[in-house]
Image (cartoon, rainbow, N blue to C red; front, side, top):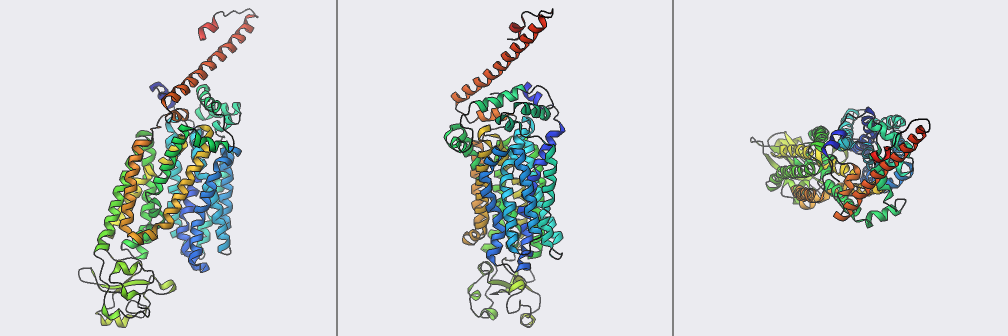
Length: 601
């Protein structure tokens, strides 16, 4: 179905404020999504110190949220179809609040784990349903922009969490404020949703035609919403298996829906395997590995989250200007370039790693393990060891040695023994001075600035396209009967891919080097750009019912278009007959209007 220029002009009328309020309130869920996934990166360091957490506990608290999100996103579609989009989002707001309060008052790690699982459940549901709700309520000409606001709010949540983590880290039990403050947006969203409408498409699916009409009139600021209701009704009437578990079967057995579902899953998969969460979750580790010390790496990690937030505004403009396909392809290609810059920052450091064979300290280690490493790179790949060195006049590391790392809180500050230990001044003096440096889990490098540039370019490329577009496209490409369930399934793909990348990033970097890992991500991004150009249809300026036609065969598209036309004609006939009856009634009172029906038919 082609969209005429006159149709587009009519659609671009000024939209009522309720449309924008709807998008703002719904995407508070996106803010909570970003905040709760981002805040743990700052809080976990304080929790580890507060409760003396083992590595297993640290891993469990960090990853539990992602695991719960993956599980509950699987069922989010069924929940939204049973309770409604609006009610589902209000319930998640309550769950977010409960989870944040549990973590804020937790006496020990057990309740913190429960709280993380709780907010993870809410994240899983809201990440799938908010884009659906916004898409079903939005006018076609600004739908993509309003859905992109969801991604913008995620980036704002991550950005705010990094700032608050820095602000509260010096306070006694500052982690309670970090985790507990997540309750406030949940309360705000719950209260504001009392004044917002249910999705008109959901109301029609439930047979509440009068409510759906009133909602559409409110959201479109016009009385005549007949065409849009007709189009929605056609999609409802032509689907027989539109309830319960039959929807799952229909997604995989209906050819055009199966094709759309494949595109949606691939976009979520490729977006995660671009490596975005390695930059968001591990930016401090990446910058540290590139050659910055711990304190500098923490501060510099704020830069990618800030750029990520600001660059999302580009997506708000581009989604309705350039279209989904072009933005996706350009975004993935930009990410590929940034990954090459990141790899370029690590490759020279790996190729010319400083020598670590100072004889004087080769045999200090009782086990002798660290003394077997000949350079800084191989030394710092072993978490039991650290690289001790001094700076030469040219700024290049000299007198390097690999010795056992310190213990406890001193691990990243001093070696266990020798000139870089807390008591190592005597040895340092023997080597010509006390200005010794100690590198744990990183190597000093003249190319470290490339890592900062690469991280900035990465999020600059990701935020406008690969970040929001998979959510936008997935909210648009499915028919009404499959929309919420298909979105929940593709969201599962997102979270499982997210979990896989995050859990394996560090071990992969140790297996094939950091620069090799980023080159692998770059290859994925090039393939993703090709996929976007070949497989993703353009949905800009099309109604949700028109978008469904894009995945159909030519014959099926013609049949569906005839049904649309028949539905519109049927509405006109019914309207004319009703007018004739009304006018005949008037005629009985002395007024005639012959020929009315023939004129309107």
